[in-house]
Length: 265
Image (cartoon, rainbow, N blue to C red):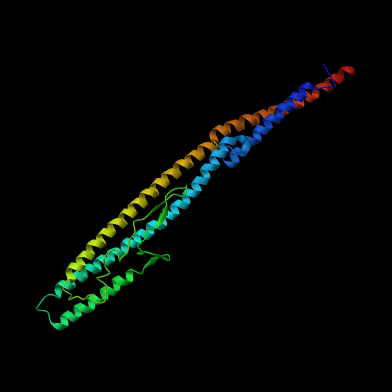
């Protein structure tokens, strides 16, 4: 038995320090819900999780852009639907105006309504969405992924829909080509509604794709960072017992030199 160096106490103190450190780490993990409390816990895992977190944030921005583009396209479709209904009525008025039994007053009433519908369609051509023209004839670029790649919406323009001749000042309900001209415009409106519908469908599919990607990225981050509460609670209980027993053993080891002194008394 030696007095100068208490090897038992030194060993007990070292083991107690290790157990205390592990107990504190388990407690911190349980409190934070993350098994990566510092970069030293899992440097590679932290780097991957950080990259995924950044991509998730960018994807949220993509989702916002897609939502705005979807609202834009749905607004376009709504106005084109109104234009189609107005053209349907104009076609009906042009047909009614060809009735030889209609009086001059009747035809004048048709002409008034016809003129109002022309003005209505012309006004729709100037509409915008959040300051962006709905019918400028140029397709908007839409962000489709977190890398900033874009694709262009199918363009829509009321001029391209061949309504220019319909809303021309000289075009009247009694024009000889009124019915055929309006029918042509109706067909073109239907074509553009189909293009806008394709835009809407693609935007919805892209939204779903980004949502699925974000869900999988979040799951990956969770597997890397989130603590297993059951497992960590077991470790916490283990280290708690070790700290308590280590404290008791250190106290016991510190009594050994005193026992040696009793032999000298």
